[in-house]
Image (cartoon, rainbow, N blue to C red):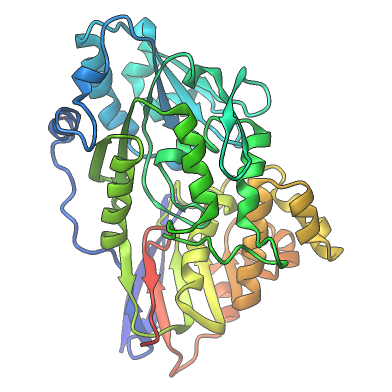
Length: 424
């Protein structure tokens, strides 16, 4: 008996069928009641924040406000809740001219005018000044040094003004979770600061990723703890973070203290999107969940890193990721040269970059399992990584060599469902 599947790929769907007897599990998020009235929910969390005075007591007339927002690769429905925040600021006597939106690009490219409009919404784009952070060119201020020695240089716009962090909470390969303190480092920090922080992703004793980091890992995660120390030097005034459900709607909003409210949101996300698996599979078929989660390979690797948690050593991962923007980071495939020459690890330690580490971790994943990537990317570009690129579903299924009695696990929302396996 065969079952039909329809998995997202960019703005479209890819359809195929599998023998039901071979499919051991389909990973979907738990049933979650998404927020129906976003405006009411925003007002509620602003009035009753976590570990913070109410919003109206934190801000007052005369304040200059910087709202830190995620870039286009991390759409978190800011346009749905930012208007309420801005209107509240206006009602407190803070005019639009004193409110600025700073896009936390980290080391990513700047945003087009259309992308900025999409991030903040049509009305606020017309009303507010929206600027990109540039890790190389923005005016920076040194705010101190972390316990682990990272020199923290941040955009002056988060030092000289009151700061509201927005963004989304999602599981993250290196930092455990996105959102919160990541809006500061790497979001609005200098390239030097970002590199120093992210070096904690590598094991100081061996040529491999640091075993203390990982998806959903916060305790004793040195990269996360260094980010927290850096954000503490800025000490943002307020936070509003969203958790986006797989259907694109807001499932949860947390607001208040920049660390404690965010941390509560992480626990909620872990409970809702961490999915126990009964066994690891011979073959994992994973979709990122469509655009923008598969906008680029850089973003799509989140699904790869989740899929690795569900596959047997030596098994196969078939990943569906359109990657309309290719690698998504200009320097990403540039790391193929040191890889071919056998010097990827030392070169990354010497010249650390986030795209470089994502490349590094993807190579590690391809060493654990055979990875087949259905995308728009030229297969020759991913071949050095140990990844087999294909351009059609038929080619993908042939490469995956689907057989009777094979144990298959399907991840329709690979970027948002975290396999949790215990051998007990």
